[in-house]
Length: 74
Image 1 (cartoon, helix red, strand yellow):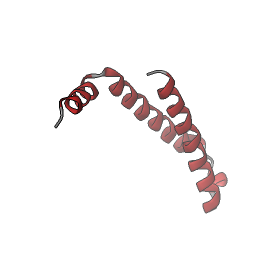
Image 2: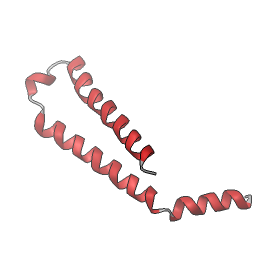
Image 3: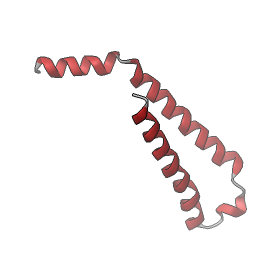
């Protein structure tokens, strides 16, 4: 291993921003799971295409928001 690579790995392990981003991502995932479990009526997710659109549509939107937030706050 080169010294530069060792320094980068050490930086990744000791930077608190990585832990903060991990916690924020897990909180966001938990929030989405709770919203889907509590907030979706059965009639809205009766068909397979409806399920895919509702679940993956929100996941895509929130994933993009998380990526934008984590990119601007570093």
